Length: 123
Image 1: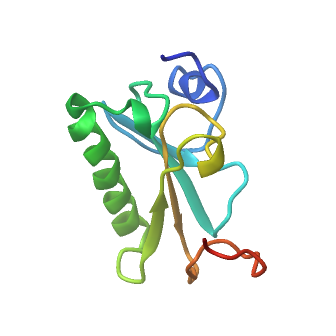
Image 2 (image 1 turned 60 degrees about the vertical axis):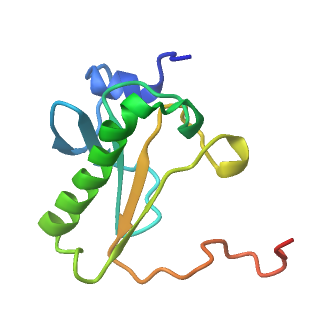
Image 3 (image 1 turned 180 degrees about the vertical axis):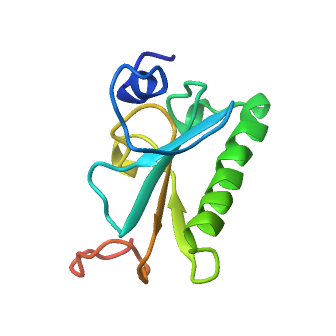
């Protein structure tokens, strides 16, 4: 279920990105619409469309994305103050690019719940 996405083009260097980390399995680059002072996307080089498409064999790869997040937090000085990592799934989850990716946000205090619309009620 893998089709080429903008992330595939970034991995293949067909389009530019502000890359902050790369290894054999993953790539991290600055989000073009940052929601925090530090906002990067951490993607696997293997194309996996959604969380629903992750298999047991992908577990080490998905775990590696979190290892990369921890490395970046230490390198950027956010590990002690804290940071947030989020992976969205499908339309209602807010996913817009169908290649799994962690959003890593840091550099400010973040509240919970993450939405700002106080009129919404949990059902």
